[in-house]
Image 1 (spheres, helix red, strand yellow):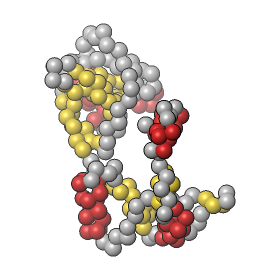
Image 2 (spheres, one colour):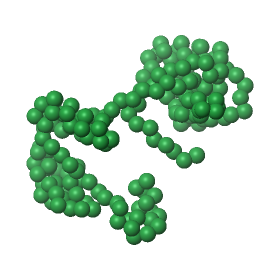
Image 3 (tube, one colour):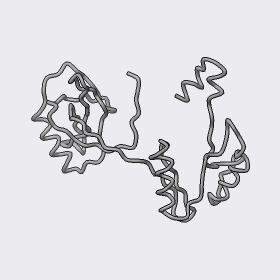
Image 4 (cartoon, one colour):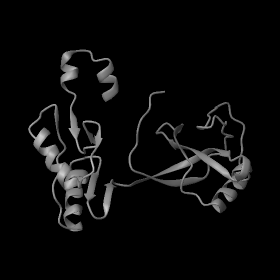
Length: 196
């Protein structure tokens, strides 16, 4: 949305809706910033704290994991923000996002090649619409053990059906379509829609 608005604004009003929230300092005058984040946060607030179109991202100091849980509930669960970035100069940086699950049916699969031949590469998943038609949802290739991949490939090969529908994965391998009778639960942080 931001890219299309910036490249082809329909009016100055469209452009005036764009904002940039600064959340970190990477370099200053082409020199890498090598300081604790607390110092960077102070500089960001000093330079951008009063800005309107370019401003510092809202941040707070949390003293305990209980505080982080409370902010997550307030900002993410209750207010709909994407997630939190938790920074610590001693233990590192973490993105904290909600996890969702969804049941979907397997409609296709691809097989690995080369040294991983004999294993499933990824699955093509769909959900059923109210009219009973299947809507392609996504491809899933992560979260499987090698043993899972072998068993899934063997089972999927026995379920292949003729189909006029064609879809390819990121390696441009066509999915053999299968009878949509297996349902899997997938876990994800967010859904992103893509134009056809």
